[in-house]
Amino acid sequence: MLVAKKIGTILTFLCLAFLASCGYVQERVDASAYEQIHRKLISMESFVAQATVQYIANNNTHTYDTVQLAKTSGEYRIEVIGPEAVAGNVTVFDGTTISQFNPNIAGRLSQTTIESPERVEILLTSFVRNFIRSQEVSIAAATIDNSLTTLLEASIPGDHPYLSTARLWVSNESLLPLRMAISDASGQERIIVEYHFFEYNVDIGDEFFLIP
Image (cartoon, rainbow, N blue to C red; front, top):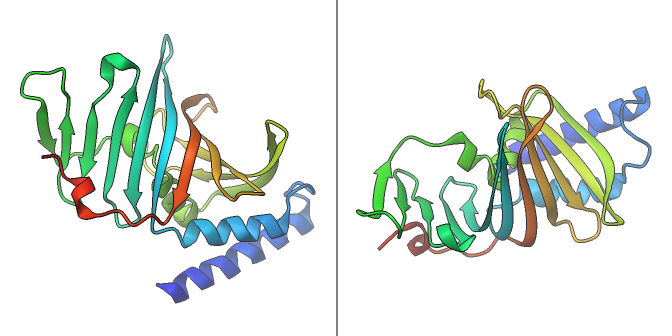
């Protein structure tokens, strides 16, 4: 696995150098920052984050404050902490079964093995997986709130009408993700994730992926 990651890193940098020589990569891209960001992402084994997630439909937008825990092995936990009307909703995947707890619905707990792309794609682990596997990626420089970032873009596999491309803005200084946007085939943003807190490689016990 480590050998594969090293090979992937080498190929990525060769590709970046080739694109730069052809003029396809903006001159402002900080190669040193990108190297650190790339290494940080591909070595990620887990994360904990607090993030605001916006789902943008044609006629309305739904916004949720969430706490997210996930492992690159697939397990995740997403808890909605706001707005108050939906606070307490928890979705957990333990590697086999997806369990959903809703304190406002009779029965409260439901289980399934069918994943929702609209849910799992908001996780950074999904972006990293898509970026590594995608045949179409791009790297650019961008600024968020006067902070320099590296902007990574990757295609999302499948034919979902609203989930075509994912873009991730990562701080050149802290190496932390600041924003992720998922767009449909026309380029319209459909899901926006704004990170307020993020920590890489947190020791997450199996108990976090269970609902009592």
